[in-house]
Image (cartoon, rainbow, N blue to C red; front, side, top):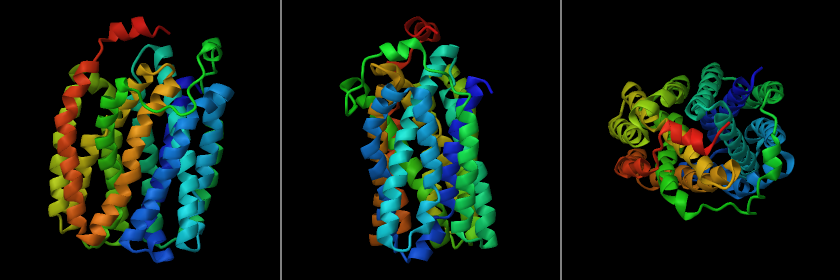
Amino acid sequence: MNHHRAIAAVFAAHGAVAGSLATRIPWIQEHVHLSAGLLGFALLCPSIGAFVGMPLASRLAHRFGSRASTRLLLALWCAGLALPALAPTPVWLFATFLLYGATAGMCDVVMNAHGVTLERHLNKPIISGLHGMWAVGSLAAGGLGTLAAQAGIDARLHLGVVAATLMVLGAIAGRGLLPDGPQAADAPAPRRFALPGRGILAIGLVGFCGTFAEGASSNWAAVYLTNVADAGPGVAAAGYTIFMLCMAGARLAGDRVVRVTGPARAVRTGGLVAVAGGVLVVLARTPALGITGFALVGLGVAIIVPLVFAAAGRAGRTPGEGVAGVATITYLSGLTAPAVTGWVADSVSYPAAFALITGILVALTLLAPVLRQRETAPERVLERHPA
């Protein structure tokens, strides 16, 4: 397995964990007897765990190497998939989500930093495609989750089997990752907490808006379709799957699109598409209209995270520190999105919650020119970061 395929498989496995859990959120909500507000708090816990763990990820990669750290954290993340469905009470669910989120965030940082390093090594853009593979993995796992939900399979059995399978596949993929070069040992040690500097705050703000809409939609699509559009368990899970299908397609084509249009125009166009989707979600009272709205949101926000992570990897002293810095901002969005969505849904209504998300997508569209200041011609990138 070559290095590009290996890191693509790592991204796919990471996405499969997220996709598997997302389709079984309604089962977990019913099993632990959670209201919309408590479910929102439960979904806040993974982001809290990630927010705490991410600043430490770049130091872990510096000490043990990018390759070894990616393999270890991916294994822990896959194993954590089985835990939420086993929680007998809300308190245990909150605790398992905290652990699940910490491993998720740290793995996210090191694998993206590894992808940025490989992108420099190959002298061609690959980050959007890697995030596309993440969406493909989430899509495949979401499809399996849809079938499991429709068949009424216990989520403890479903998630346990998927966790074990992904641990094996992740271990195989990890063996093909790019070895750490001698320059990695000579790189400066990252700061203990890689908080973002001024240079990437604007990039992070774009990522904040995109991640908010993406996180809220992926976590609440199935629940929203169940409670507002009166969808059955299988149809509701399919809404998430279609959302991820659109994310996957847009990200797989993202490197080519950005090469032609530039980041600013790509973000502006995507923002407008996502706003249209958000409006449809707010108006939806049937599964078909709601699923169409979520599909457009997925298309619109797909390339936001890859673009900001790639930019951050070039802006930091090391790829790991740069990614960790901007990830702190984007995961702050993930920290708030599920909880805010749940609280607004509980206190006002589900459509009101997604009206708020649509407003954030409008802000994303207005912020698109920020990326124009950071567009760099391909030959300049090669001059600054030779293989």
